[in-house]
Length: 193
Image (cartoon, rainbow, N blue to C red; front, side):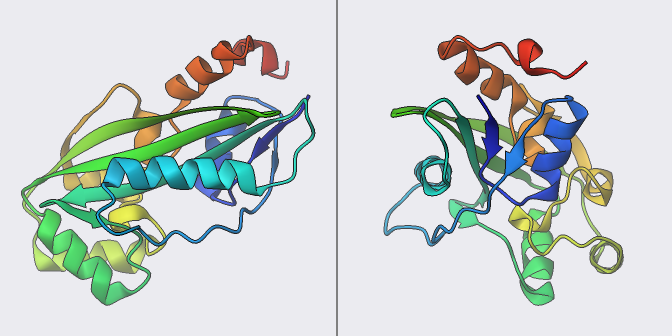
């Protein structure tokens, strides 16, 4: 049995490494374009499942797929990819609450389990120069909403609301443990000594 993370995200890898869980990574080749009229929750669940199913695994392996987007003013906010888009996203977040949805899928043989975790972040009022400084210091263009919460973005928040702080980073560990237990596997049993 092997645990495979269908992601090349350094943040997701760091979470599993901190838990001392042996795993390997494979890059899933999945189109992340939202479908017409797809909600944020539907999008992240669909992409997490697609990623988990896109990598090669043996019948005894467990494959983890994950995807995350933000949602603000009824709009899906993905990775900005450009500085201009990141500035626009962060300006719109200033003084507001933003929901981050993380889809999680676990594939084992022909079986699939999936869930979506919600984490709400309340942003303080941000001055334009703070946003500029953040973007100068933090490589966050490949993060949903330009938010790298495991880094400097935490300084822009007044609060984080959700059951698992790892969900905001992109890999909800509580939900992962629940899905593994549905297959009869305990995360503690996977932890290297």
